[in-house]
Image (cartoon, rainbow, N blue to C red; front, side):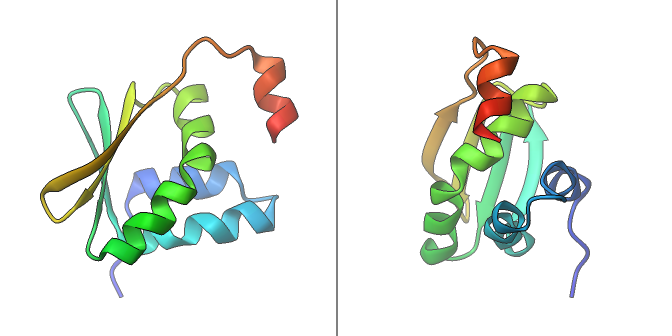
Length: 100
């Protein structure tokens, strides 16, 4: 089994104390996660994996926004983009911590 990328491990570490949310993000081990030109790409191999990633998008968005990793999150199946999410930058820290 291939080792998860540094970005995936960073997202997992953000939720290391909350096992329910960490379990939802474990689907990222089946995806290729990388950054290019200010966009976080999540390349999935199957549509079912992509659906699970899109369902976990709010969990992915919080650490991406707090760590300023990118301005957009784009989900791909193969090389075809199926969804793009804006990373909301105007949330206050209190809103984010309440959600956690």
